[in-house]
Length: 302
Image: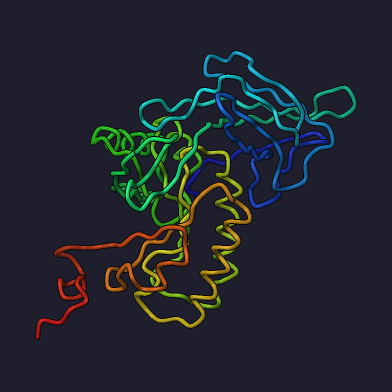
């Protein structure tokens, strides 16, 4: 075990705990004019009677309603990247009879985003350049058994350089990391460890890990990108195109509001049809490292 462990004791009527690590509630947000709309549901089963309360950053009750109904948030305050990463608190109460039998809490943000081939990334209707780094879950002398202390140290350095985005490579990171990204207003690229070579025997494992990633991190406003794979054309492997299409379809069905992407090995180049299967694509270039210049350009000098 390299992360914290909690023992949960719940009543007979409780929010789901078993569906791919479901945090209990799934919160969808949207914006209509100056108002926000919020709907609480679940990937797994939901208790029959659920009351929902929404609080602002100052812990003031701003809206309430029931699960599965659209709850309006008047004069909604947007989550606006590093400039203003505003978060609302959503509390859901499950009832058994007239008594509250279980309670869960999550934070959400209201934002819109889009990708434009000429203007780049658009956040809440305005250009928002994405400049940042890739972040691994490791630390000198600790490996991947990092705590919140090491995560805070890494994020402090990332924030200090002015990064607006972070790629969380190449696997699911700790829940604490996603929460801190929400607070800092950093746009997140999330992904699972599907790397370098396609192996048919690993298909079910990749699908399962992607479901876990989506279900467990669905409520985080910082997450914009869901990555299909990393440098998957570096080595062989039959069936990778069909599997990428299947994975891309599953992501859009489970998480339709976000965009898919993939990090491609430099030799593939952006015009390769393989790079067009996701909503967006990215290229990994390693100048002076393990990719010679001739591979980067696709040319031979001889």
